[in-house]
Image 1 (cartoon, rainbow, N blue to C red):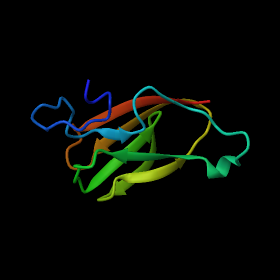
Image 2 (spheres, one colour):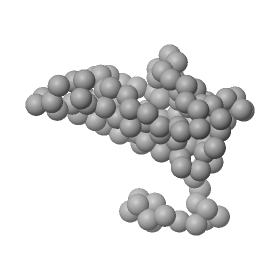
Image 3 (spheres, rainbow, N blue to C red):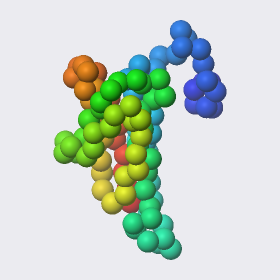
Image 4 (cartoon, one colour):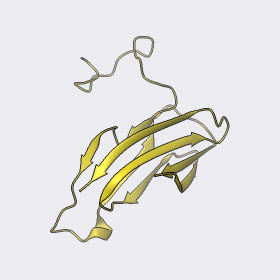
Length: 104
């Protein structure tokens, strides 16, 4: 219940994965604003704060979107559609996380 309210819990009590996408949230629905040009509408994509991997590859609907080093956050200009975003560790290809979200 604490997580649902945005309250941080101690790591030993938390069920969160170590390698995890923190934004966007799984199942999120974004709506484009009609009064703002599309090129000014974006989503911040990022990994959980504690991630220290040297390189992370980001895939959007199975297409390489970006590779990040050290700072694992960037802006993605939104486009309407259903998306699956996957982050894969460059150090250990077995470490990955995926979220799905929609842009309307």
